Image (tube, rainbow, N blue to C red; front, side, top):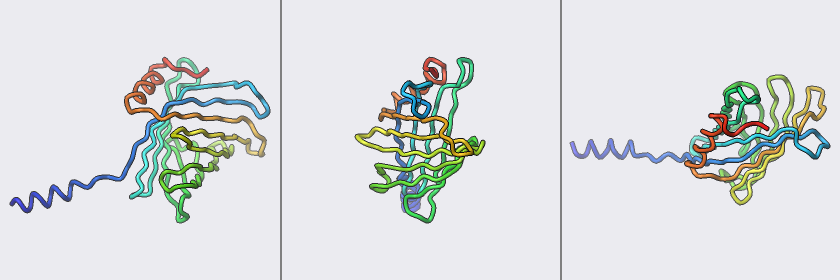
Length: 179
């Protein structure tokens, strides 16, 4: 009986390889060639990476676009392709899908390119860098005819799980808003 219990315990004691990272930050929107942003919003992100399963999941929470609108939660699932470091991406709302190509140290990537198509056929191309734990991304949103519509800059700073929950709650309760 003891041997059976020991076997069951060791079988259930598998330690998952998934790692969760928490971030707080903001998104700034500008028109191409413009210097002054036309929009800025806070955001929080939780990124879960599981190298053993070859999966990545990003969860972003942003304020509603109007003072009365509910906060938006966007979950993006990354699925590995046959090419190392290249992932197909799609969000839970099915508002976009595309490809992300990572470069650098596997599972601790320092740079990635983004190429996605929105549900309305707009195209988003961008580059993100991770340096000193911070993530900075610059994405350009193009019309269906290829005209640049706006530039979205994201700046995320690492945070503890407690800080993440605090800021997430503030966004959901509309204490932190879209400007």
